[in-house]
Image (cartoon, rainbow, N blue to C red; front, side, top):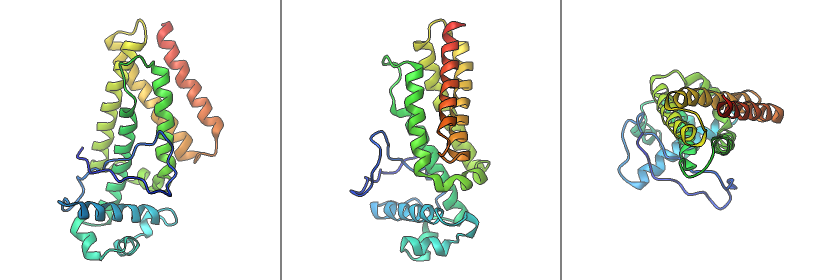
Length: 226
């Protein structure tokens, strides 16, 4: 995935210490910006759209609304994006890229155990979706688009490769074959946990999060016993 320069947080933003600012996937752009000003305009369009999604359903948001919110001319929006669907797709891709960065943030092969790594990553993933809560309906509606599916497949491949390393190095008696199979199961548990806690319960069911953490911890422990 192609990245863009990171936008530093403003003085008024209160980000958790573990939060990692995202890069952006450029595959849905009509034209790739060549200068910083262009990158800033693309970011402004995405940020404006996400802000509108806090109070309106994505089907009720048009390109004129997004341009007005971003304080840009409609021609500037169409210079970079084909249509509003491309903007929506890019928003979802931005979150998926950010999720991948959370898996990459914690080093593997440096003495950290699988359970500790998974706990840290799960906390970070929850922070990502808390920040982008307004995109939940959009994500569920767009997740089967070809561009989004490609991002999701890349995320799964990247995350499971890291989990394989952890399970082989940090779990006694787990060979390469079982590590690969277990990594897929563990990844699905992580993402299902995130879906249940954040997408469905909207962060208001802490007991659900606790039960998922227990289930994941139990699964990791079972790998060491069997």
